[in-house]
Structures are given as C-alpha cells and as structure tokens.
Length: 159
Image (cartoon, rainbow, N blue to C red; front, side, top):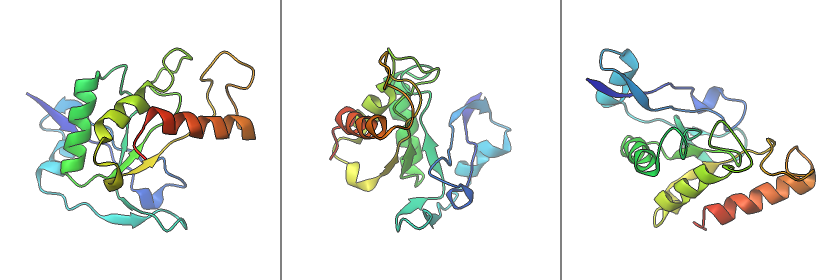
C-alpha cells in the first residue's frame, strides 16, 4: 500500500522562499510518511527579514499540471493545508519540464484551488527560465521580472 511521504527543508534554513515539501507515493514504511501521520505540529517561522510568518514546510508545486493532474494537485494541496502548511512555492515556468507552451499552468491550478481562501496562504513564485519564444521571455531583466509578476497574478486571480 502506498501513502504520501514528504521531503522537508525548514524555511528557517533556506536562503529564500525555496524550502519545499514534495508529497508523492512512497512505501508506508518510509519514516517520512509517518511525519504527518504522527500528528506533527506545524511550526511557524519568520521568512528572513520580510516580516512574513510562514509554515515551516513549504509546498513545492513543480509537478502540478504535468505529472499531477488538477484533481491530484488539489488533493495534495488539501492534504498539506489540513496539516498546517500555508506556504506554497511555485514558478512562472512550472510545470517541470518547462516549455514555453506549458509555462504558467501550475499557477493556474493553484489559483483555482485558492478561490475563497487566498488570505490564508503565503504564495512564493520565481522567474528567470524561458516562458515564451520572444527575446525577453527569459532572464532577470527588469522587464521580464515585472511581466512575470503581472502574469503570475493574472493566472492566480486571487487578489
């Protein structure tokens, strides 16, 4: 029998918002699978000097919309939320492997799931990877960073 397991990187040890938790099928005897099952009490951490408070575990979403369909992605987010995870990490290029044709689909799934509960979660996103076919559709130029932020907000109409 398979049950979810997790890989944990405490947010307090991360240099930025890239701490992740990946839920995936694994044997029940996996010690990490027991982490949640034993009633782990989610800790709250400050995110650097931002003033934000986040769950110690951040849900990584790079498989949503490719390896995980929408239904599975929703189930993963629901399970994480039930266990106190309210910090969600994504990127404009997700799902992985990134292609200009699939860029942003993960954020669309997250946006659908967050409808009506957006104020309960801290969302982190990233940019740099190619998300289109244009010359400025990748990198860390001011233009690309601002467009990536605007596109991310559009895909997650939760504000």
